[in-house]
Length: 207
Image (cartoon, rainbow, N blue to C red; front, side, top):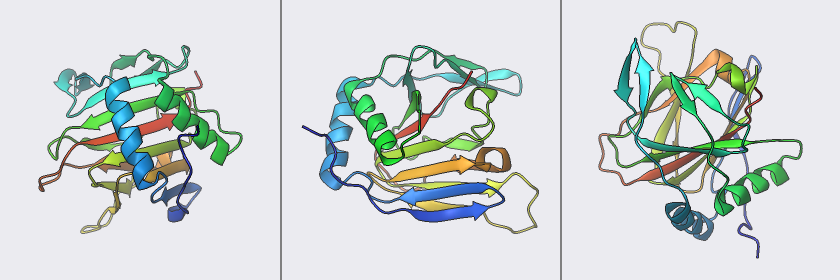
């Protein structure tokens, strides 16, 4: 039996200078998203980790796991990630992504678990050499709605604001083209009391 039946229409959020960010609300229907949530809890073990910032190791403010093909080793911020095997649910998700966009060849996924509003990810770009010059990244959100923001790497005028979108349960966000080389993105802390959130970023490690 197929795990998925739906898929929301896309809305372009950024389209300039070869950069594109677009959003598919309710890529997973409500029942599908609940089902995937339950399966991830049973299949994926997210663990604490550290990253290297300014020459010292600091705790990552979220839990994470790296899954994918055996050759999809990845390094960022001083962390070496060796992929665990695909779980049945992660495999089903990546197969649906590829079915939506034939020609994609994702071979890995970074699973982040935000336990509450205190967990976050700061401004960064997924521009490591292992991802290639113009990576396509598909980011699936499950659980609590959280704000996703992006801004240009170029200096902004005083008072300029970053752009953003609230990503809800089952939403899918795509980043592609020159987005990683020209823009930064983040999921900031929330001052509101929010529940846990899974975020799965599918990508291709090219070497």
